[in-house]
Amino acid sequence: MMSVDYAASDLLPPAASPELVASVQHALALKDLLEQEFEALRVQDLDAFEAMQTRKLEIFDTLHALTRVGTPDNLLDEPEWDSFKHLISDCRELHRRNEVLISRKLDAIRGTLNTLLGTDQTASVEVYDRLGRVSRGRRGRGYEEA
Image 1: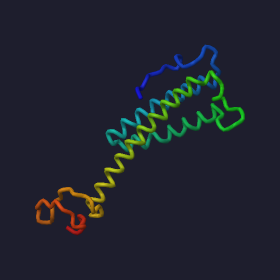
Image 2 (image 1 turned 60 degrees about the horizontal axis):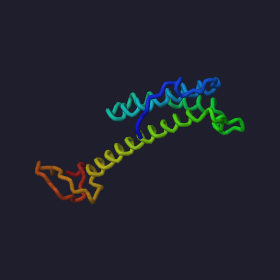
Image 3 (image 1 turned 180 degrees about the vertical axis):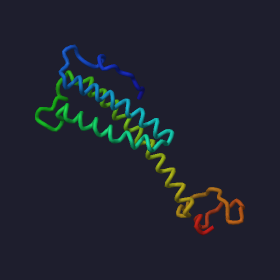
């Protein structure tokens, strides 16, 4: 999905409620934070990624309160909130992109650990034995036993 930069004024109807204005501002902040989160994940800056989590949760809590989701006064059913819902949908896609990146990195780490520990019997990677020779086949020995 192609990312589109929004300005808050482009998303708001002329007589927008204060809740909608604040919600759009928070959603734009969330979108920016998700972009920063992706960049931190891409360059493996886990400290920056961790630091963003608190702010992200604060935004979620604020959006939940502003939109009154889960209450009889839910504002999202009103037509003026359609652009907000579209923006939140974009945020969901960015979140999924970040989730996929995290999953791929975790899979790569698990694969590396399995290879090093010798628990992946299907691995046909080249590793060095204790004499420094390349060994193609796996004999079920991990790096601890070499």
